[in-house]
Image 1 (cartoon, rainbow, N blue to C red):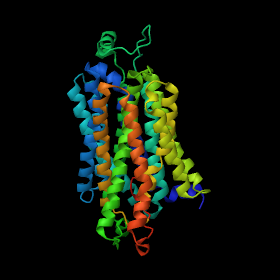
Image 2: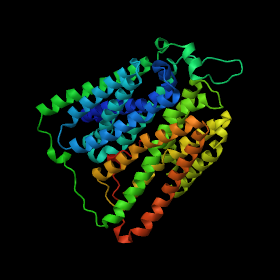
Image 3: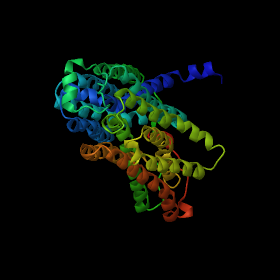
Image 4: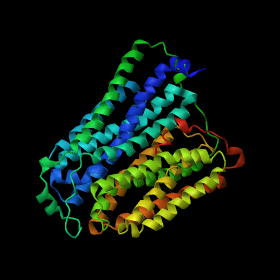
Length: 444
């Protein structure tokens, strides 16, 4: 089958997948949008920095509730209709948020938008799997690459709307009062970056609405293709729950780690002894996401020549080295923060994916099990930023220590997971239930 024939045969599936790609790219953008613009949002609301950082976990809290809602309504409502409402509400709320001058108004918008984004995260994965069935793996991989692309491009987009950092004679960071004296809330332009992301997210919602009416009118679709195959696990429940708990902890560390870099990283490099500009901070986070996104393909290529165990050991070493480079030197020396985050982005990129696929070598991971992992994982996006913001009020250097400790804990748990599985599962229980394409394993 040539390319033209492939497009004709699968044109509906490809169009649906394209809307999923746009949605996930926008979700990636939403995850780094606040971090890149946090200092300008501070000027907008004219509140102390330690209070403004409270906006960071607001989206993650909503995200967690959204994940629970998605699990409850997944089998009861039409997926196209849910995706339309979730896309449109997330877009409207994220677009409105920075136009307010009140901290709590912005907080509420981020919180409610996070609920919609949590619904989108789970539904888009399920939707893509139902569209492609057994052919889903490659499309899911590309889908979650689009998430990384959104994370990568958004800091560059935001950079164009950031206010110029005031320069002092001794190159020291200005206090909150000095910044407020330099700029007024009306000077802030970063809300236009939010608006662009909102428009892109909103555009995909209408695509799902059209398919809702189309699919409703053509109910002759083959129901067999949408049925989930029920597979019974032979292993003891406690074994499965133990391993799911370990991977949930890995997810918690993984999701928290990327939130810390994406949301607090730009503010850290400005407020710390590095004295970098907001523009440089946005560039630094962009480089992290670039390495994080594209190293995944390097990892896949290396697996063609080396065993996965050796490739992952190299990845783990990169993370450990990054922890030693960053803590505490990255709070003072720019070369350390650059080297540390580049090593972290590359080494950390495949860890969660490999951990999730490890489970599927021993037992079937249902959507319900996967939802539990992701819901616990998403709590890391609120818990870790909240803890770190309290510490950073005392001293900015805590950012490097916390990042180093969290990444080391994640890597250590990833390393022992295969050992645990090998010890508790009997040889006859080991089966390959690889279904990585059906759940969000390539995102983080």
